[in-house]
Length: 60
Image (cartoon, rainbow, N blue to C red; front, side):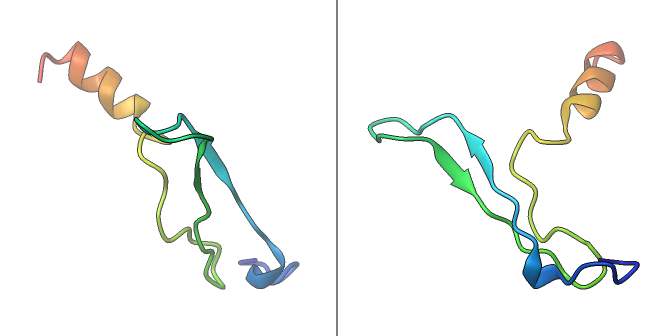
């Protein structure tokens, strides 16, 4: 997208998570992608493991 190889409207991403309490099926998040390849909203927990690990190591 950033290199204009493919248009953002031609790409779809779907993240599947655990189902929420009292619901059936998985929780699905489908973020939007802008022309620069930026994702509008990452699902919770997608990229935060590093932060959690550092916090644990530093006792934060």
